[in-house]
Amino acid sequence: MSDDPHAHYLREQEDTGERLDRQWNELLQELRLAQTGTQILFAFLLAIPFTDRFQDADAFTHDVYAGTLITSALAVGLFLAPVSFHRILFQKKMRDKMIPIAGRMAAGGLFFLILAISSGVLLALDVVLSRTAAFVVVAIVLVWFVTFWYVIPLWIRRSSRATEE
Image 1 (cartoon, rainbow, N blue to C red):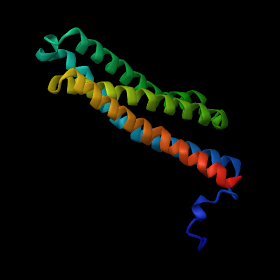
Image 2 (image 1 turned 120 degrees about the horizontal axis):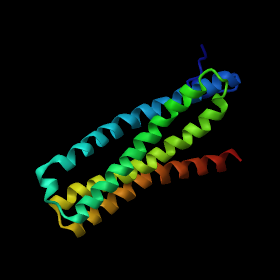
Image 3 (image 1 turned 60 degrees about the vertical axis):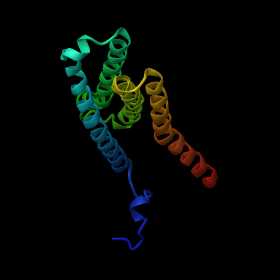
């Protein structure tokens, strides 16, 4: 065992198989986190149209609901797709091809999850706030998600590349 506290970040001694296993396991951990919340959101959305209040809602609410349900379903589908992908390619020694594709699926799932969360917030806030106020709050929520899920990580990645060069 190394005395270096950063030894777990050093990957020089990792062979290709170990690297692929680590990357696949890291991706699966990320997907487990994302899947749970997305599936709960999707399940709640499935119940909404069966409520009395929803039956009396206007066309705008029904349209926002439809968009929320669809984007949530797309997010669930993309988060679960790597499982199917893995099952079909299991023991075919194709993990090097699976990981980048599954990573793109996860990124796509996050994109649709942001849309589902934002439109879900709009759906709820449209009931308790004016429609204009609901749109303003949703815009703030959307900017917050984009900032923390994309802008900051991309900024850190870019700045770390600059220090490596």
